Image 1 (tube, rainbow, N blue to C red):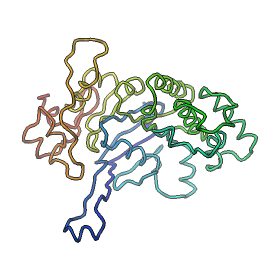
Image 2 (cartoon, rainbow, N blue to C red):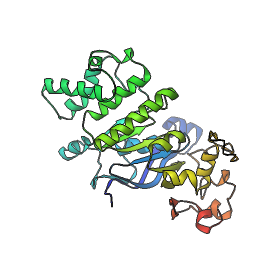
Image 3 (cartoon, helix red, strand yellow):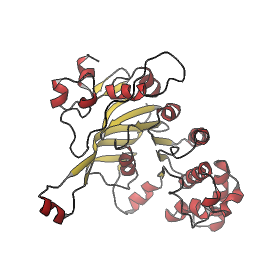
Image 4 (tube, helix red, strand yellow):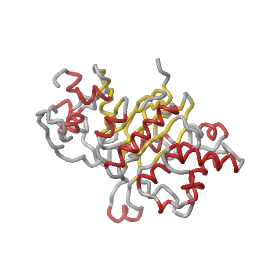
Length: 330
């Protein structure tokens, strides 16, 4: 049995989105809170890729930031190799932070335009105290540039001299410079052309095999997820509604929302399967629907769905949080 590297238990994040105090007094309004992540639990085994998918606003990026310590959870816990993640600067946490990194969505915004590439890639090594000898740092930067498909001479250039795909390779090299075990990939190919996306995804798969990396892969593109993930988690309005192995999820989705997402994917294989567009819109997360938050868009909803929050139930492929699945009517 593979040992989980990441354990997420009852993770919740609530943001205060209230108007300024004086505006609330004048307009006689109460404080408003947005529950961006709602009681999410999952595990990621060593060496595997777990993907999180969902429409915009489903909480994917918020979970990613909590996993790497950029945001503190309002409730719940993140365990990295059975060690709790905390928002402090203790020696214990500093050692833990060396073991994970993050690749951000935009290769244009995540690289400092004033720094040369060699300095960008070397930064984690110096900040985390991994290497102090400048000659060794320069040697390691050259190795990483070659590893991600660039030239060692590119270290002397600035980010604006590279294309989007090349910049993302630089971002990957920066993440690898800390020798991490776990990398959070927050939609790393969404800002790139389709042809370049395939190159970056193949690079990431090769690096995972070569270095034994563990990924949390966040995306809204199901075709990308199908190529990358061992398991897939589907998020809706901050809650995890289904988790299953990748092939099983595409073959036999259980939750109605998962089915809706897959029905919206173009049928490139011309299998003759009927496809439907995603109906409706995500409700206002500040004032979500009662019961199952998906019930206003669900063709299988009944009175129980409107009043009772569903709990995850075991399925043949994983689990799904759905009254219809639990009752066997879906």
